[in-house]
Image (tube, rainbow, N blue to C red; front, top):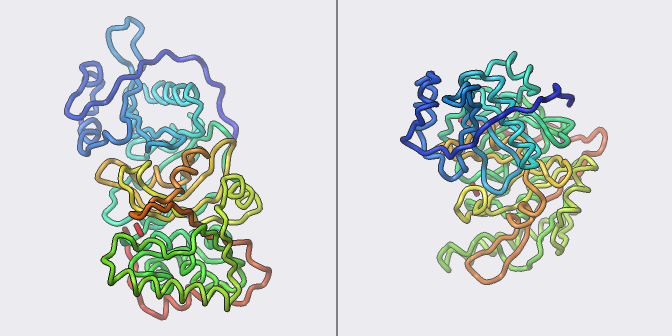
Length: 385
């Protein structure tokens, strides 16, 4: 997108410390905004203030609270106060100086008119937010390096274990195979029930469930191990029956024509796939972005130079992370490659992905999952495997 011409802006960057309000910030007013900044522990997301000093250097005329998930390629403005356009201009310059791909802006206090004047476009409101989330109703984005052609709907998983199902559903909604109206909790739980290895969705079982739900969509699994996955943390007796289910999923894949490629899906291959209009469900660890080594499914759907754009169906609301972070989330190639290397309790590492190709024209079963979800009567919810 085109953006207004930027002028040089003098700014200072200072760490944001919970429970502490610098005197120049306090003099800007908007106490309720600053109190909200301190309401959660944001320390895991490099919180800092980007401030514009007054001409006399004695105070600030504007300030913004800025955060970002670790190992990602963006900055997020939580709020800007004082001379808001000046604060936002300073943040954009700060992001450019760090050669980042994107700046986001949570819509707590930002108006659409002010955001548009600063070169931001609105994000589509979330269909639902992840379980127990409390993010803003709206948000904005400004790309500094490339951008994405079309925006998927954002759907936050409504349980702690349905990330695989949600990524598949969002992929199909983005492809036009599933209508936004049928993207709801009924569809989420229906697909999870077909794909689960109790409670996680492993790659082969997820791919089989997707193929069964949408026969017109070609599906390929990339899994560089023959052993059962995502079961190491279970007691040995529970690993055995989950392993049996995974062997059954492999047999089902052979019967219905889902190929299993034993090679690691590289970042170049992911870029090629999304460039062709395909969608990649990628299994990652949350250790880098969230600080705990839990396997989790994300959706790769776009790319800009040096960075892949993903949808993450989960946000850690207790730390100030919201759907605005998780939606259209740019992750640099090297960081995403590290995240996609899973290290189970055993010494073997592995990589897992499911590639959903573009549906064939006139596919007969386009709405099969939505119809099944509606028939099941599963409730809708407004709210990681």
